[in-house]
Length: 469
Image (spheres, rainbow, N blue to C red):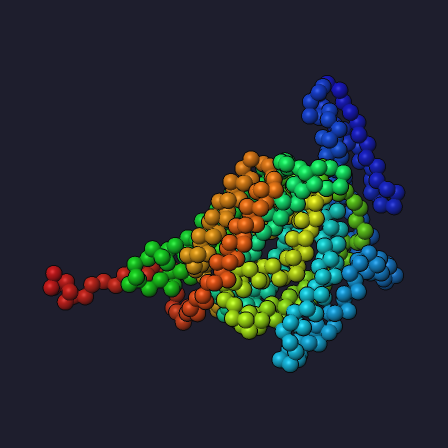
């Protein structure tokens, strides 16, 4: 058994101690391979960063440093000139009744692009300190946070069917449209290499775990709807639907908390392909990064709200159904999600298929276990009784989509045909919902009468009916 001493030294501009890391590996074993040493080196580097942050790396009180970082940030964004559309987009909101919905849509869409880029930079800078395990989780959360706020506005306006369809549509667009594009692009020929007939998914443990969690999410999301289908017609089940939906939401939130512990702590090293991690130093101090992320999310949320309003007006003008708006238009037209999808596809083009799949599946799992349940709980708090009352068509497409994804990732390989199958599945679903009629408006009149500890049983037979028998 030979001992190897690997000394990692950091750049002199970063005030950190130089850690001494000792690796012991056997002859010809995994510990001797250069790739394993490289992965261990990256892990140790991130641990050193986390444990040795100084005050100067957390906050700077010198205004000149703030100005320097702001100037450097804007200079590094090629699309920074699109920020000029943000002020007109804000002004247009006061005159939206007199301005075309298409104009409002375009201005808000263009203003979101540099804001989303700023959000990406801030998250990358934060994950440079806390480690690669948090990268895909934070990127997914940033996009889903915007979607959660937008759907919160729709929930407040009692657009229950659009909220439900949007939650479902966001999951389907990720696991079918974007995952299909990732598989397809990862298999295409690129400059310097031929087409990759079967791309290996090294993070198979993470993929299989995420696929299993999505299968559980299907069970949780369709149980209230199937309960409504199976209940006797003479039973008043409005309160039962609310109680089941709220209990399901609480259980899913607890499950997501456990998933975070699993993903970030107990099994973090097994879920990351360290060979795809781009190691870089943090450019800015921590408070600057957090402030950037908060401002970017606020700006994206503001623009996305009016972008969605313009989409709804266009949908009414062209007589598009609520299900099609929620399932197809909103998930694909919210630019924060579109840029997140772009990053996943770009990673696939760079042969970082594990990173791309991690981002896609993290986003899908967060929507199923966090965004949907939170909307149910928020509706409970603000007197907006959102239930998980999906239509039979929505139940069928969700269950079949997750089943297809589980089958395709079971062999831990990806190829262009599997990508084409996922894309075809999404197009079939989009066509079906394009022709799907609007469902009746939800009735929330019985909200105040609901008791979570009371079951709504069928009425007892009257005494006269009993005497007749």
